[in-house]
Amino acid sequence: MDDTNQRRPVPPTTVRRLSTYYRVLGAVLADGQSNVSSETLASMTGFTAAQVRRDLAYFGSFGKRGVGYAVSLLRQRLAAILGIDRGWRIGLVGVGNLGRALMAYPGFNNQGFDAVAAFDSDPAVIGSVVNGQRVRPIGNLAAAVRDEQIEMVIVTVPAEAAQQVVDQAIAAGVRAILNFAPTQLRVPSHVQLSSVDLAVEVEYLTYSLAE
Amino acid sequence: MDDTNQRRPVPPTTVRRLSTYYRVLGAVLADGQSNVSSETLASMTGFTAAQVRRDLAYFGSFGKRGVGYAVSLLRQRLAAILGIDRGWRIGLVGVGNLGRALMAYPGFNNQGFDAVAAFDSDPAVIGSVVNGQRVRPIGNLAAAVRDEQIEMVIVTVPAEAAQQVVDQAIAAGVRAILNFAPTQLRVPSHVQLSSVDLAVEVEYLTYSLAE
Image (tube, rainbow over all chains, first blue to last red; front, side):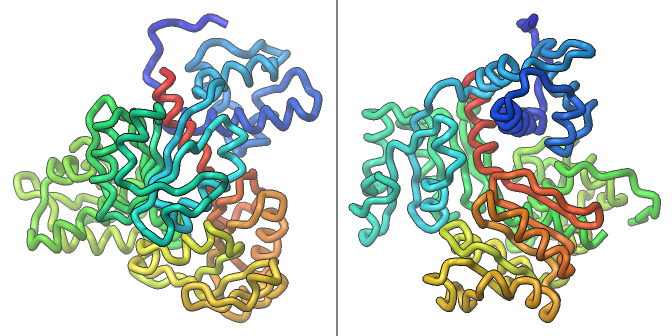
């Protein structure tokens, strides 16, 4: 269980697979198993056993040859690595269909993600209650980030409004942005940015079909 | 412009970056530029110039040293590679908030993706019109796939309903699935599957913050 201080840089695709291992280990745990092999994790995730071992090796030696991984311990370690062993205060900017879908997304609340505030620019939406949150005017975003220690903002506003929203949130102290607006955002290097472009996912499939 | 028949296998992350290059080239074209360097593409996308050159080299030699890439030609080639130089007939299963958001997503219709049918199991939703489509009962999915040559299905039903929906669609002839349900789906090897787990994206950010 040695966790060296000088880690190799971890590829983003490995980090994303850790999330999948974490969820699959929850199912293994619920099933009452205390150990699990890389082969079982492979068959449950669709990755290869070699990939599973390589991914987990980035973070120390979790497994024992012939015994496999200790399910509960590995799951705890993955939660700590992924930063989901604590809650995160998240603001949602843009309460359209996608914003509403995200606020109601069952995977979020189970994981310690807490949407503590929601913002929109539409007077017809401001003041309405969505998933237990009263929607606030977007002009209150910066003050809310400061006063309520919001650490991450999820952006589902139209493309042309996204950069301004992000600039305001960062100036007020937000450290991470999850962007769904179909546009390239500029953020300073101390801020983490992840963009989800839904058309990219469809194009990945049409690429495979067209080949 | 030689396109060898024996291509090296292309990593999924490269394919996803092609989508980004395609969109950025649209902006360059609208700007009236006929050539573009890998450095410019790098600064517009946030990838490195070396990464841009490596990605495009998978598909032949598009660029000329000192001149850069011919914008219009490269964009056409990327469209062909990504399979978006033709329309695709797409069915949407699950007309909740996420389904509605996807049907209205501006990036989809611009790209030749045509949601020709929408399905739901909720009697209160069936028969209503969403983005120009009358929502049909989910029991009609297989017949619609067959009769209307639906090639791809986007799944936004709850996790526990997803596998059954996917099995029906595949039995009726669908060749690609874009899955948003937070569950691992099993599909036969001739079917392309891409899953978007929105919690994974948040965990990628919390990983970065926790580091």
